[in-house]
Length: 262
Image 1 (tube, helix red, strand yellow):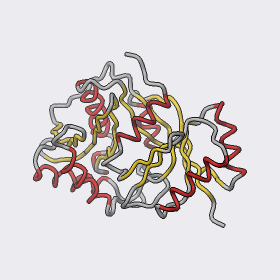
Image 2 (cartoon, helix red, strand yellow):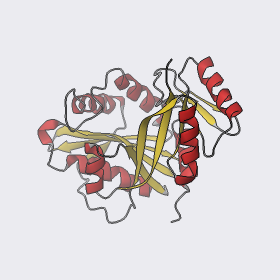
Image 3 (cartoon, helix red, strand yellow):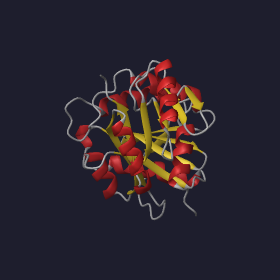
C-alpha cells in the first residue's frame, strides 16, 4: 500500500484532531491554524506550514493566534529544505519548543493474544476505561513523561461520547484475568489510524499488556482499512524506545517553534 507524503499525513492529522483536540481550523491558504478552546499550550494552538513563508505571512499567523489569545507558534516537518524556515523563525524571535517523532507500524506480522481486549461500547465501560487510564498516568513515573491526566480525563470522556458512534474514536481496555490493567485509543480518519492514550498499571509493567494495547490498535487500524498506523513520541523518551521494540519506526520528525516572550 502506498504511503502518504509526510506533508499530506500532517495535513490529514490536523483534520483528524478537529472536533477532538482542535475546536477550530483557520485556513489561510498558505497555512492552517489549529485552535483549542480548553488548553492554551502551543502544542494544541499553532500554524502548520509546508514551505518557507514570507515575513508578511508570519505576521498574519501572529495576528490570528494573538486574536485567539494564543502565543504565536509554527509547526512543520523537520526536513532539509525547510532548514531556511527554522533560521527565518529564529531571526524573528522563535525557538524550538518541541519535536515530534512520528512513528509508523507496517501493520504486518502482528502476533498478540487479543482475546482479553474489549472495545468500550457503553458508558459503564467508558467509566471503567477512564478509571484505569487515570491510574496508568501518575506523577514521577520514569516510564511516563506526561505526568497526571488532570482535567484531560474529562476531555477523554467528552471525546468518546461525541465520536464513538461514528467509529472515529475507539477506546480499548485490556484485562489480566478479570481485572482491567491497560488501555489504548485509536482515532480513524482519512486513511490514518492514530494511536494514543496507551498506558498500563505499574503493577503489570513488563508483562506485555502495553504491547497488547498498542498492537491491538494497529490490528484494528488495518481492519478498518487505514493506510497509515501511526503515533507521535519524543526521541529518547521511554515511550519512543518502547514503540521501537514493538515494531514502530520513526519516519520523520516535526518541529514546533514558539515566539519568545519579551
